[in-house]
Length: 475
Image (cartoon, rainbow, N blue to C red; front, top):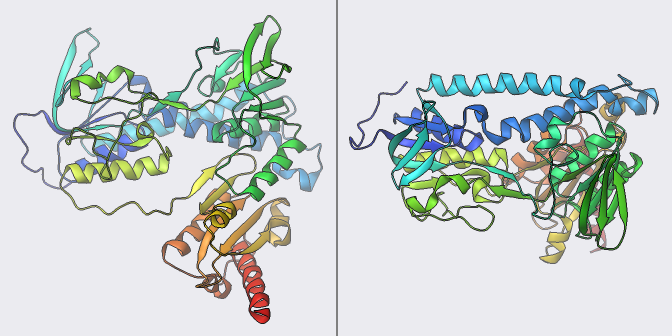
């Protein structure tokens, strides 16, 4: 542990972090490792933040439980009727989730204690730009002063005022984790990342899922070919899509729900889940007392160093908006803490991988074909399909694919897009090659373990270079 550095005597702490999610954790620990006196405040039931309790960790754990219990990924090998457990209950699904969340809470608490971060249990609110109040069990408030403050409060699901949420039949992505039983039918409003992740999970469990989306398609941030592959796979699981449709009303009845669309269609289902974006958790902060304000979606504006309009107050993570990923939040928290402590810190690399935990997974880094075409950037495509790989046959994944977008001029990678088992892990190979300015020739000449899914990079690279060679011969 480095020696504690001298601090401004007027404040209780050098750095105070509000929120203990991925961004808040990393900010607090980074400042502590730089020898600063650090405190962190969060609700006692939310240590680890939204990410750990209702977001990333439980939803991805639920996904693993679904894949294991349904035997979905093994059906190419053992037949379409293969299923590890016939009658899958909510208790089966949540047992694994409770175990993982409990262990992760212990890890977070241990890391904070090991780095001598003082933990305050309670919802903090500003009383002035350098001071927050945290409620105590006695009912009184403790005032905590800090030279620098980092806001990392995260977000909550946005709830349209016109919808009567009850947390049981009409719910958001937080409530869906506490379902009493696996629904026979389900309507999911919103075809964004969260909506499609849950659509694929419940479809795998055997629920009849209908996705309603006002836009003409889903996951518009992804490569079109990848999205088409996912749509085909989900339709095979009996998912129905209603694109270009807007929900007019959701009616709750004794035996279920009725979703009424503006087009006049009516969709009966056991439950309805809204996935209509996220709202920043800033309502209880009393930002005005700190000289700050949030926008209509509860987000706080920051500069490139994650400073707000008040220079000694920083904000990181989902509360500042895009990209709103746990991975980027961690790096933002570290960077904000370093800047607050006067420590040099490099800029976050522009190449950030996106992982979408649908069934199957999607992950990509760099630009898509549509973006390159719109920017008038020439490219060649190299493709590898899992069914052509020995490892793909071994694990029974015949639908996975890896796509490389290659510049014909300097042969660098412009984008990497992956769909299938292990996509969110595989993408980091492409990210590293792109980040180091490597070319497709590096992948052609590299030796990958065999049999692995990583071998798809070599297959796709050979495909791309063969296409480039054909063009060169004719040009």
